[in-house]
Length: 100
Ligand SMILES: [Zn+2]
Image 1: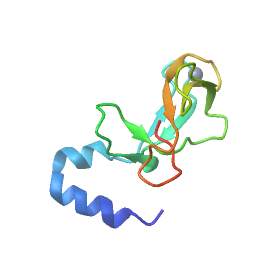
Image 2: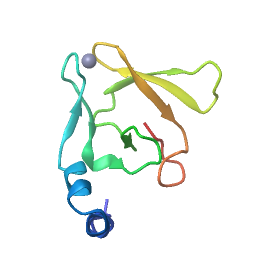
Image 3: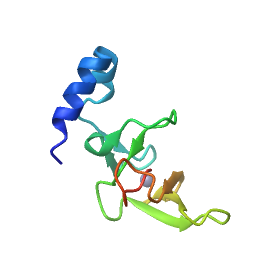
Image 4: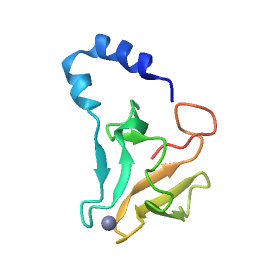
């Protein structure tokens, strides 16, 4: 979405390590291989986990409301169902985007 210049800038900043980090890649379910996230929607976040703004398919993941957190969902593979992590609403790089 028109942010390649941003990546280039960061690559210059971070060099080789950052570049490897952002190789075109698709993150798939470890169990069934279903496409979950694309590195295109990957972005740098302060947490040690990879952060994404969107899934590849609408049904890539199944979401369940987290009991104690109103703005978080438990995220699991849309096909075979093991838990993957969480989606945090409005915690993405832009207003209204989610962080996975
Ligand atoms: Zn799966």
